[in-house]
Image (cartoon, rainbow, N blue to C red):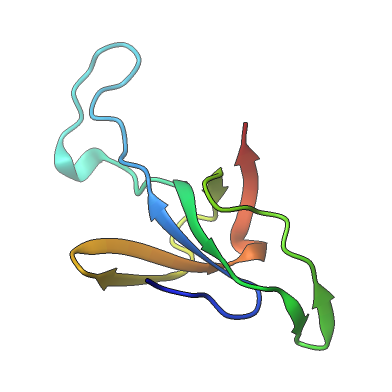
Length: 93
């Protein structure tokens, strides 16, 4: 398992919808990279770049991230994205 350091968060991306709301099926190259993810692990926070960072996201939450942010990692056949908490734009409730 990945254990993030400092203000990092490990995410798994939620698959993009295959069809639009009006029922149009999207071709593979027409899909945008999904920006909704599920939090898998959360770092401890602490002193980051001279500032105290408190972690506000929790394991299991669904979040929206900045597009194309983070580092992609594949471990045991599962793809993860590691981002800084500041790359997370919102928590989906």
